[in-house]
Amino acid sequence: MTMPLPTLEPSALPARRALATRNAGWAKALARRLARASIRPNAVSVASVVFAVCAGCAYCLAADVDDRARMMLLLLAAASIQLRLLCNLLDGMLAVEEGLKSKTGDIYNDLPDRIADIVILVGAGCSVRNLPLGMLLGWAAAVMAIFTAYVRLLGGSLGATQPFIGPMAKQHRMFALTIATLLSAVEAVLGLPLRAMRIGLAIIAAGSFVTAWRRTRRIVSEVNAQ
Image 1 (cartoon, rainbow, N blue to C red):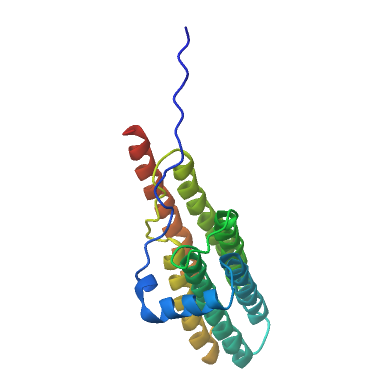
Image 2: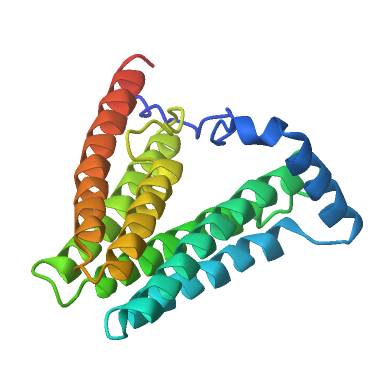
């Protein structure tokens, strides 16, 4: 008689990134206000994509304008990235802390993030498309960002805890890109090529590769221990 193969159930642990910002008074107050205004988590998740598109468009336009306009567009992109992250913070707080989680919440929580990563990182590559390897680095960073998320979700599907470790998880990627964008704005003021943007994208791509490798090792170790 053939014994049925054991099946691994998805991890019962909450697939949620640990963020100290959730405990900040201003974040809790803002989440409460949004909840009282009947703003739902899914709507906030969609808004994060809107801000990502703003950042991506600003990056794309920055390549072929004068230095002052380039600086302004880069500052707009940096601000849009932070607003995207704010949406990512608030949608989770609305769903969990304010008790507004829906059946489709996990879809809206993850899919918009993947769209936002692609739009922002490829857009950043567009900002340096006139420099050698600029566009390639943007695509490389975007592909590796998606791959790190895929590995995390794969772990969850195998019954392991979804690993949110870095060194280039979402918050780390966006922090590195924001710094690169602000430094590029300074370069624009000085009339210099946006070398900081290329360096930032290279760091994100390489760091994301290391992140995917570390996550894979952790998942393999956990699955083997089951």
